[in-house]
Image 1 (cartoon, rainbow, N blue to C red):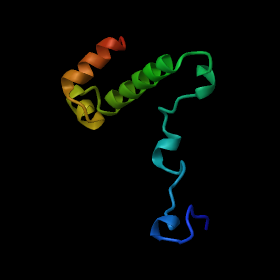
Image 2: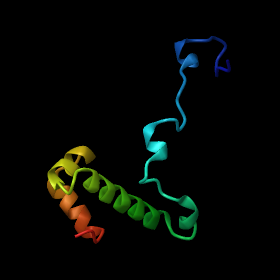
Image 3: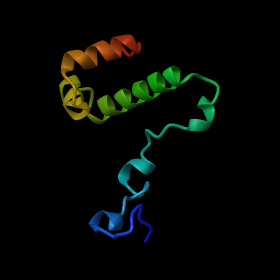
Length: 87
């Protein structure tokens, strides 16, 4: 065990899982290799667009349910869809 100080405490034994969850194998995963020639802003917009599309699909097109799942208000989701040309 490696610690920053001279004493070991309970936080030194915390294990953080790295990628072994359901999201790792999701069909909504973004292939990062095709985004190496764009800006971070463009990448984030594309990632947000794909994520919103996936959540709406999972909610069978229900904007209300999708907004709830995303943790945002329905009107915010509408504005994001408009800004990302998803309407």
